[in-house]
Image 1 (cartoon, rainbow, N blue to C red):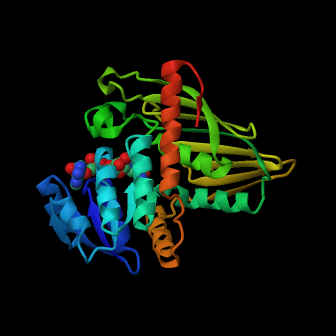
Image 2 (cartoon, helix red, strand yellow):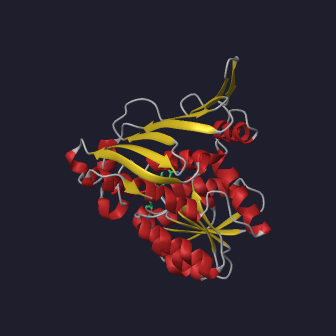
Amino acid sequence: MRVAIIGCGGIGARRAQAVQNTDGLSVVIGVDVVEDAARAFGERFGCESSTDWEAAVTRADVDLVVVSTANNAHASVSIRAMSAGKHVICEKPLARNPDECQAMVEAARQYGVKLKTGFNHRYSHHTWRARELFEEGAIGNLIFARGRTGHGNAEGLSKRWFGNFELSGGGTFLDNGVHLLDLSRWFMGDFVEATGFVHTHLPALGRCEDNGFGIYRTADGRVCQLQSSWTQWKGYLFLELFGENGTLLINYDDQSCTLIRRGAESSVWQFAGVPDQSWQRELVEMAAAVRENREPLANGYDGWQAVKMAYAVYEASATGRSVRL
Ligand SMILES: NC(=O)c1ccc[n+]([C@@H]2O[C@H](COP(=O)([O-])OP(=O)(O)OC[C@H]3O[C@@H](n4cnc5c(N)ncnc54)[C@H](O)[C@@H]3O)[C@@H](O)[C@H]2O)c1
C-alpha cells in the first residue's frame, strides 16, 4: 500500500518509520502546513513533500492516508480522504468531540473504506499477551477493572496545541487518557453509564483538564474505575482486570503482563528491552483488514466510543449527574 502521511510532527515521523519498516508499505508523500516541517520530513524519509493536504489525500497513487495532525484537523482531513476512496488510520483521539467522530464513522460507511483509530497501545507486547490470556479464559469473566495513566508534562503541553481546547477538544482524558478508555472498553465491553470529575490545576490550560477521574458501568452492572493525569510525576499506564478466576495486570512502566490465578502462583511476562513494535503491528493489522475486506481492530467506532467516554465524564463533572452513554 502506498501511504500519505498528513502531519509531519513527532508522531508523523514515528508512523513514517513504521511504514518504512513494514513489508509491502511505502511512504509516497508527507504533508504539513508548516513548509519547513514538510520539507525536512521529505528529506528524512526520501519521499515527496507538500503543504497541500487535500491534493495529497486525493492522489491516484495513494491507497492509505495516515492522519497525524493536531486533533482539530483529524475529521476534515480523514473525511476528505475517505470521500476520495482512501483507507485511513487516524491518530487518537479520533477527533475533538463525539460529533466529529460520528461524522467520520459515517463517512467510512458511506464511501466503503476502512477507518482505523491509532490505538497503538493495543499492540504493545505486554498488552497483546494480556489480551491472548484473557481470550483463552485465563481469568474468566471480568468482574471489575481499575486503571490509571499519567505523565507530568502539563506545563509543556499548555504551550502547545494540546493545551488549546479549540485545537485539542479536551485535556488529559482525550490525550493519554483515551488509550486507557479504549483498553478498558476493549476488555470490559460497552459501557452504558458514566460519572466522574475533571479538574485543571494549571490555569494556563484553560478548559483542558490536567486530571480526570471516571467511573463507568456496563449494562450488566460491572464497574470500571479510571484516572488520567498530566501532573503525575512518575508512572505511565497501569490497568488491572479482575475476573472470576484471577487477575491480569498490564504495566507499561516495566512492560510486563502479570497473571494472578485464584489460589495459585503468579506468572509474569516481561518485555522490557524488547523493541516497541506496536506501530508496525498496527499497520500490518490494517493492511490485513483491507486485504480481507473486514473491519480493522480498533476501528472508527471504537475511536468514537472512547471519545464519548471522555465527554460523558466532562458532562458529569459539569452537571453533577451521571450520564447515559
Ligand atoms: N498514538 C500515540 O501514542 C500518540 C502519542 C502522541 C500523540 N499522538 C497524536 O498524534 C497526533 C499528532 O501529535 P504530535 O505529537 O505529532 O503533534 P505535533 O505538534 O508534533 O505534530 C502535529 C503536526 O501536524 C501539523 N498540522 C496541523 N494541522 C495540519 C493540517 N491541517 N495539515 C497538515 N499538517 C497539519 C503541524 O504543523 C505539526 O507539524 C495528535 O492527534 C496526537 O494526539 C498519538
